[in-house]
Length: 512
Image 1 (cartoon, helix red, strand yellow):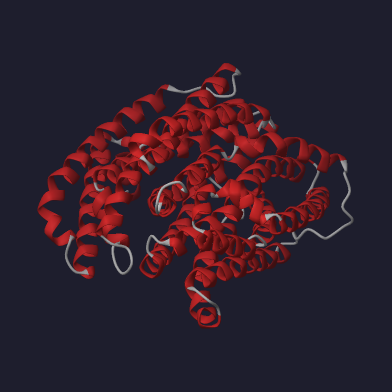
Image 2 (tube, helix red, strand yellow; image 1 turned 135 degrees about the vertical axis):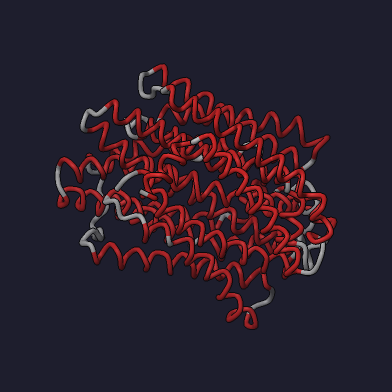
């Protein structure tokens, strides 16, 4: 399957998931607003989500997929299945232990996770309770990550990409049924997180079993394959999850400000739409492809794959980042401003979105560059770079939190993201694992020119549409869609005119 086709498959499912995610967030914002209950739930949701992204999706996938893909290509399906069974059994023991200890130690962990909540005992206790409910999610979602790695390595992307859709459906539907039986809407959402983990796991179990790829539960042992996996997972935990580490630092510091956690959450949710649709999709499709090319000795093919992946990622992420920065205020107002979420909340949230959007291309490029190391089974270098970037993020957090409060946290994350890209690219080129071709430079120049056209359209139309963007729900949604569509159309037409990524050439071929 080609990189473009794989990316399109993953991206389309992710887009559907994110649309449902917006429905979910609109419901949460309307019900909980930016309040004690929303702060408590977002911390409770962030804890298992953080562990998932850092260890399950990040470190585990980065170490497991190249190893499993190599075995599948060289040693055959039986050897690969044996390795996946050993990995799953060992992983399950670790997950059960981590979850049990976390639940028991939650009151002490909360002093680290949200130290600012101590001043409000009710809020502090509520967060502990909700996090205990959500913590078992990490067990099921980590198993989902393993099963997803198996399917992705076999070029079966659709089922895995659809799992977040299940997550969002659960968070929308489950609270409706369990809400009347438990104390608050925040409790209902926490229960929904747990149910979502079970549902996602069962979904992929069915697909793996259908294709004869379901790992079996065996006696946990430190086999050579598992030892190698653990050796690679350790450093990859930070190497693949630097953005998550930085967001987690933001969470700790933002808890010092009233509703700071909620403002960052809502802003990050908007920013994560293109990040997930583009970055995760391209990175997920690229890793197994690079692993096979490098194992086969096709160095030039690997270089081409990297360059084309960067082109595709920037073609989509640059206009998304610029658009989010220009129309951040109407996006937040239209998406969230209703019910308990008021105009003041919008005023506090949209500057954080601008700051996050400034780093959007960097967050996406990290997901494209990191597989260049993982495909060579090098997880130590991204770890060292990530550690440096965490320090950079912390320094800028401390520098910016005074004058900019929670917005400073978002900007520090973006600065650390760009530093991460610069260092990853420098090391890849120095080692001869990446070669930037002339075509990439030319295409980036064309993209920037097309983005300038789009920016001009958005700025020109923003003010005339302002009254409609502040109107009734249907009117303002229509106005925002119209504004976004005009900017998108301008970018696409400019891309055609400049023949960016060969768009004009491909269009002519299709007509022929």
